[in-house]
Length: 84
Image 1 (cartoon, rainbow, N blue to C red):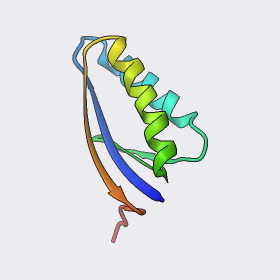
Image 2: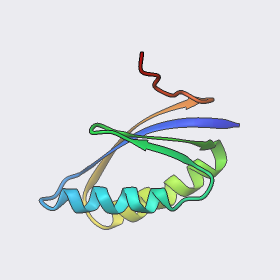
Image 3: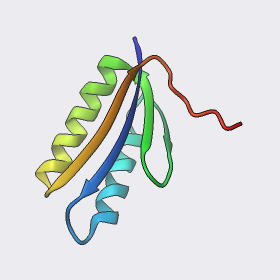
Image 4: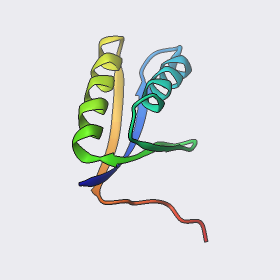
């Protein structure tokens, strides 16, 4: 089943930009997902099970590296923003 996840990462530390960039770089390296990023969040689309397995590991790594907060929305199918 295809799923769409919108995720925002809020590292609660002074050097937060480096944590966000590192997290996004790791997310980009996950095979089989589509990813689009804007100034507020990142949308990832892919197989539900694969997304959760990869995202769960990346979130665990981020939380172990310091204090971070994640905000997410999860939907079945493809939920893409269409301008117009």
